[in-house]
Amino acid sequence: EVQLLESGGALVRPGGSLRLSCAASGFTFSKIAMSWVRQAPGKGLEWVSTIAYSGTYYADSVRGRFTISRDDSKDTLYLQMNSLRAADTAVYYCVKGLVHVDYWGQGTLVTVSS
Amino acid sequence: DIVMTQTPLSLSVAPGQAASISCKSSQSLLDSDGKTCLYWYLQRAGQPPQLLIYAVSNRFSGVPDRFSGSGSRTDFTLKISRVEAEDVGIYYCMQTLQFPRTFGQGTKLEIK
Image: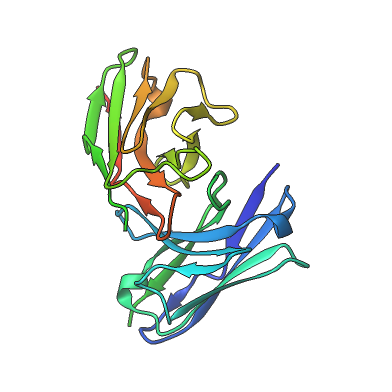
């Protein structure tokens, strides 16, 4: 059974930093591209970033501030978020797959507020 | 960026009746391998999205056969043949052809 468990969400002040983690199980993590997708309160879904064999990809809204990475020895995906803004407030989902995007984690809430 | 446009944005359907959601993309979602990169998800209240349909018309594991997807290139449709109470939620289409990945605005399905 595929499981994706996010952690690291918190209340952080504008300009602050946070690192999200996603622990994966139930599939061969090292062979699968992974992404982060976020959802602001009461809003729709917004793709944030993907890490694949071909490289890393970012939404314009986070490029230069967020960094996606992975540790295949730990089956874990990360999202380092710097220079956080109020507009980054959202539930962040860890998502499996590059073209075939199938499983989503339960999400972790990031709140950016003073 | 590929713009995904869903209609309607909300839908109220009586149990047992059919429902249909449209998703239009601003450019063709057909990739060089002949696959069309259009996906449908359902997000129930307080839950993460779950995959319903992949590559336009393929039901994901465990998805009831009352859900079906159709379309090609830029015009796609999700149909529910007989709506049930558990189908309530927000439906999203998503393109995975190119970056940035983009979603439709979502269609909220309610039961009458």
